[in-house]
Amino acid sequence: MSRVELHELSVRAGSTALISDVTLNVEAGTWCTIVGPNGAGKTTLVETIAGLRRPSRGSVSIAGQLVSSMNERERALRVALVTQHPIVPSGMSVRDYVALGRTAYHGLLRAPSVGDRQAVTDVLARLSLDEYANRDVVTLSGGERQRMVLARALAQATMVMVLDEPITGLDLRHQITMLELLQKEVHECGLTVIATLHDLTLAGQFADRLVLLDHGRLVLDGPSGEVVRSKELADCYGMNLRVIDVDGADVVIPVRH
Image (cartoon, rainbow, N blue to C red; front, side, top):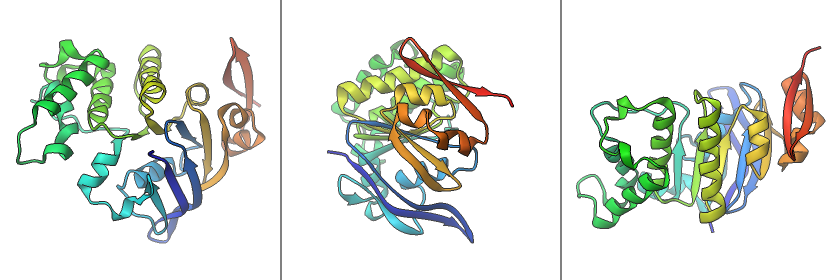
């Protein structure tokens, strides 16, 4: 089981503390979203979970193994990362881009196996990207490109996926489509998702639990409905927040003074 555990995690950049003493356990097959105002440390936290940053103190482990002890290939087999602004090279087909997610399985010097190629084909089908498979990546729309980036991460076939603002720049329909695709992977495949989202309404509707960060510190961790209705959430954002129920879903509305 791919449980993610953070123990007294701190990350510094020179003399600046970016993350301070965060302890967090994310159960396998659940969706945890990290929220908080700009500068709270959300991106730093997910990058550290994915192994892009090394802790100054404390640890991150996946299924009991320290991320800091893994080499690049070992990390790629355990955790997939979708960054906020992924690099998408021109002159590459969608299929070839998604196939990059299989590199950890066959290495850079060996050709993909039949199983690797089938895994890519399956992911393209799951995300309705079949018809774009031979298109140049730069010809895709924003929503299509985001699905392609998610497809590459899913092709890694890890049990943990870390996403930093995966719906940035998408219109409302594509935002919902992207989040529903991820939720399906959590429910049907047991994927563990750790994400950051600015939209508090969508964060509360799709995540099993929310983790509130402010100035690099964990302020609140709990079920989504409790966190979105908490005083701490409004305090961290420095404004009044009203939460209303719309057909059973919490909608967070900022209220001007």
